[in-house]
Amino acid sequence: MKKETDILIIGAGPVGLFTVFEAGLLGLECILIDNLDKIGGQCSELYPEKPIYDIPGVPNQTAQEHVEALLEQIKPFNYEVFLNERVDTIEELKDEEISSWKVITSNKNEFITKSVFIAAGAGSFEPRRPPNIENPDIFLDKGIAYAVRSQDRYKNKDVVIFGGGDSALDWTVELSKIAKSIKLVHRRDEFRGAPNTEAQMRELVKSGNVELMTPFVIEDLVGQNHIEGAKIKNFESKEIEEIKCEEILFLFGLNKKLGPLAEWGIDMVNKKISVDTEKFETSSAGLFAVGDINDYPGKLDLILCGFHETTLAVQEAYRRKHPGERVPFGYTTSNTKLQRKLGVSD
Image (cartoon, rainbow, N blue to C red):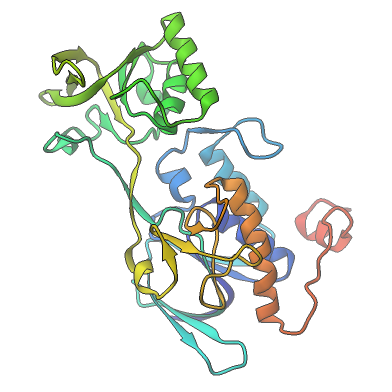
């Protein structure tokens, strides 16, 4: 199959979806490609029920609710989605004054576009497994998990969470509301998560709703057909202690795998794509990187930063599609034609 589009977006997470919205405001059509089997990127795959608090104007929203809101927002615009598909090769076509790009996927589909937006989050990813455990996946969905896909699974259960970052802290706080007991195990009494969430966790420890176990590391798993507990080792005394539980969450973060991205000839730093901060364009004209995949001075890996980045990048994509034309910028609050398209005007 061969298709042409104004913007081809690699990654159907929140930033990729918002790119469709910003492009639609300017009359540009998009194609989204993602190697996952559903829209939503890491939000849907890894933590659909994790609350998000830093979306402007939305006090509290789960990751999946955020994805669904973005899908609702882009309904008026023209776009296509190709899932279970990976971009394998990108080739520049220099037949015209402003070059195009030919993109070929793992399904042998071919796309021609003036602008490619790489919105691949952290790239391909997989959860980090616990160290020293030979095959923890034998208990996968039998008491072992690397992400919370349904909070109901943990209702009235004895739960142990291993980790010291945002996810470990977030889920300690959230699951303490429904679990029978929560133990948070970490190798030191210092955490890498948001200070506010850490403060909430420590308040739960003081009130007895959470048991904090430091400095401990996982030593072994206990159970036959289902997890029954874990053996943990004191990081300082080396003594082994066994704790009983019904569910274990290993929240050690993700291993990033860039895959074919590393072979596309784009300037990169520490497995992230270097971009300017005017157009969020890479070292190749017409290739843009937005969201967690990019790198520049002062970069923050926040969804709202990705929204800002792709908003500016789409402006340049319009110029590439319509060279010499002024980008038709206008406020949605005063554009009645656009309001009718969005279904918010009489």
